[in-house]
Length: 94
Image 1 (cartoon, rainbow, N blue to C red):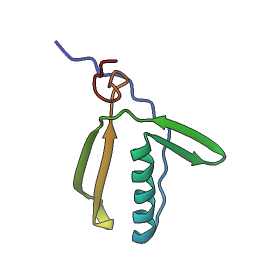
Image 2 (image 1 turned 30 degrees about the horizontal axis):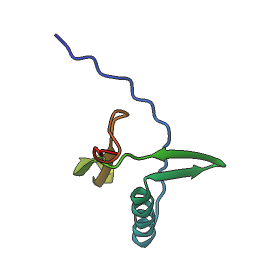
Image 3 (image 1 turned 45 degrees about the vertical axis):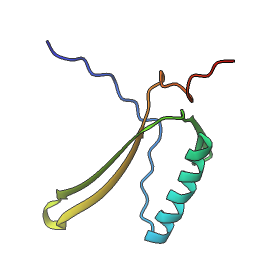
Image 4 (image 1 turned 120 degrees about the vertical axis):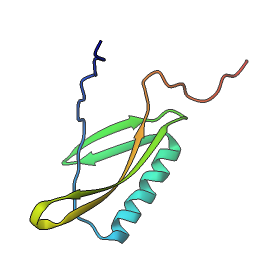
C-alpha cells in the first residue's frame, strides 16, 4: 500500500545574492524573531506573519550538486518544521 503524501503549497520564497556579512546579519535577526515566537516576512509590499510553537524540528543539510559547466554548487540548508498540532509550552495545572 502506498503512502499518500500531502500537497505542498509555497507561501513565500526569496533568493538573493548577498555578502557573507549580510547573510550573517539576516540570520541573527531571524534568530531573534524565532525566539519571540513570531516571524514576519516582508517582500514587495506584502507581509506574511508566522506564529511558531515552543518546540520545533531543526533540520540542517550540507549538499554538493554537480551543475555541469558551472561546476559543483554547494549548499548549507537550514529548515525549521512544525505541525499545526504541536503544542505551545508544557502542560500546566492551574
